[in-house]
Length: 126
Image 1 (tube, rainbow, N blue to C red):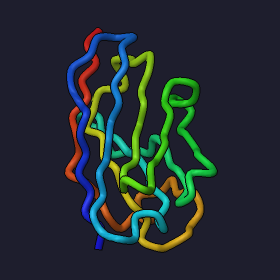
Image 2 (cartoon, rainbow, N blue to C red):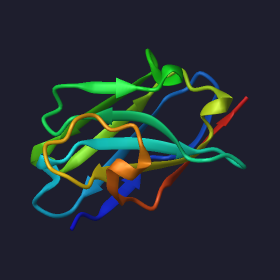
Image 3 (tube, one colour):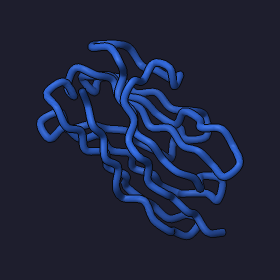
């Protein structure tokens, strides 16, 4: 079992930055790929970024490329999402997720992730 707790959300102006953290419990964190998803008001949850279990590969949705960076510290059971040059459209609840299987590739689909955090609110004011 993996429990995930996000933090670092908040209110920021357009062009600002935030760093989200996701702390994981359990001893299998370093075996699982991790992802960040977000849900804007009135919209479905969408993929933002993913990182492999080793941290060797990352993948981003087009709107996040060049602005967001996903990283992980397996020694601290934590995954991060550094968000720069934030836009109003980045507003939403951000969720981290852990894949259901070990040593999987980069996942962009929700059904590849079996463990989810409770989410952290990011609000970008224009």
